[in-house]
Length: 473
Ligand code: F0G
Image (cartoon, rainbow, N blue to C red; front, side, top):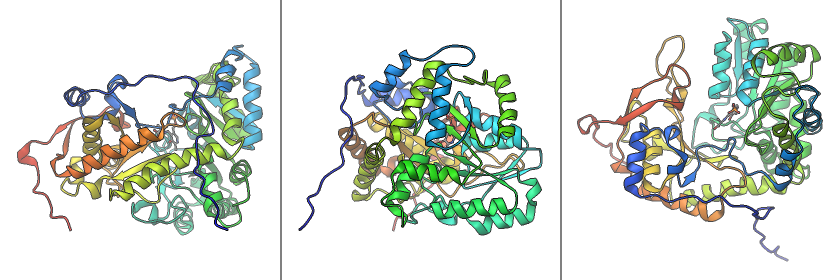
């Protein structure tokens, strides 16, 4: 007998709403000009559907809001800290908790306690703040992700995998003594929200142990990675995401987490470790840069909402199924309309392939930045550049890095927007794609030294600078 089709639906109903406002095209043209064609510099009031990021933009549950009222604001020994410590040990499996204000606070402390000038830190693709802190501590990041991750058209199911041959080469060239740890990101953000497989992580960890090198996870989106392992990796179909997440963390010596993603809170993060001695050193810096060891960078109520969010994300598999299901819904709509998107559809957003969409704009004129601005002008949908602007300059040569991926990220906040919002987004992307020949490139008029994408300013290239459109096949 054929099984009846049952769609996924959100495992919650809506108890409170926040009005949003549609603006006129004229208003948006003005707003993006004032923002220097950088979506980070727009005011949120001028945005209709905000897909800038899934970071800190989740809707909390009634249980989390209730937790805010129960936060213990004691300077030392807060009850809420112990709740959080228990949640992290239970769900992630790490005994030592170092609470920070967000993910980069944890990256800062980890980099400072482990990296010496001249060290090399291999990682499965860079993340902006992670690499910044590694370089700031005097280290050098080396990319060891599989080649498929740099190809937006490859449908490899685990594009976040570490290339073990690349890792072996780095170890042979640099020597294990110069590698304080390897940095493994779950559901790799810059690759398009792509998972790594359990088998690959297990092997990577074994190789690290063989050489006495630590393996530190960026477990910011480990839940979404666990979901993809359940869906795609043989042997995991019947395991809960909760069990899979715990197994992921078992192949590591610690993790940095931005709790603003999987963990369903608006602020917070942590460094979690196994080794009490490393944790002791981390706490030494924590009290200097963040706050006392039992709150770090968070208030008691933040920690209370966070520990509840950690349990809630894995209570059943329905949460992550609906979360990734919504992202896939938008992605599949765009694929059906013939819009070039990075494949497979990732866990936290749909990544438009700006290079393929705008072949008439060379990378020096920031195609993804231009596309993000054009999409905003069309409909008030805010997205984010993830291409040459985000990649920044090589600190040694001062040259622009030229990533092969030139993407615009439509990032879906958790539990915030409905399917109807996704329909509007798809319609707008399709409209912009249909009129793509009219989009012009940009020149950068202000470039900050570090993490330039946050504050850089642009203006459209003058008509005389526009290169003739290449013929499209
Ligand atoms: N690691 C990953 C994989 C991230 O995606 C982020 C943040 C961080 C670390 C840093 O954490 O923001 O809490 O300090 N990503 C956000 C984004 C900014 O939009 O992708 P944070």
